[in-house]
Structure formats: structure tokens, C-alpha cells
Image (cartoon, rainbow, N blue to C red; front, side, top):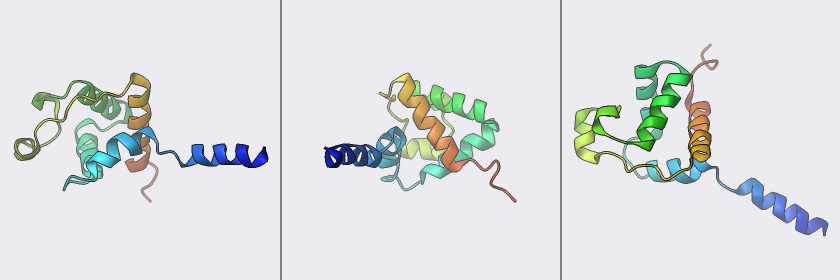
Length: 108
């Protein structure tokens, strides 16, 4: 019985996060790294709240008008397809994205 419980807990610990499974897996196929998108959002929106909000709006309703990509990249790659993640999953993914790349508290 102990081995069974351990196996379940071990398996749960190895599952990829929503962010890893739905964002990183796709973006790693692109020539532009996912962190570059983050820095563009941060330059435009500055704060965690505004950046996360803008990212959420874009992922729920992607358009050229609300994209942070420059026109050349938009022409090359187009506009992303609408996210199929639930509100909860989207929040979780955006929060992990923010925590992964935020610079606040990391600069010395």
C-alpha cells in the first residue's frame, strides 16, 4: 500500500504545469524565445497587474491591435490562436510565467 501511495504522489509531482504544458511546449518551437515576449510586455505595461491583465486579454482575444509583437514579426508569424484554457488555468499559467521571468527582486 505504501508503494502505491508513493507512486501516485511521485507521478503527481512529475506532471507538467499548465504553463509548461500549454505555453512552453509551443513556444519552444519558435525562433523567438518565450522570455522575449515577457520583456516586451514588461516594457509596455511595467507592473505585474497591468502586464498580467494585458497578457490575459490578448490570450483570450488575440488581435493585431492588442499584440506586443512588432509588425514584421506579426507578418511572419501571424496572430496567435485564441487560448482554450479555462480562466483558472490561464491565471495559473500567467502567474507562473510572471514568476519565472520577473526581474523585480532579482536585481542587485
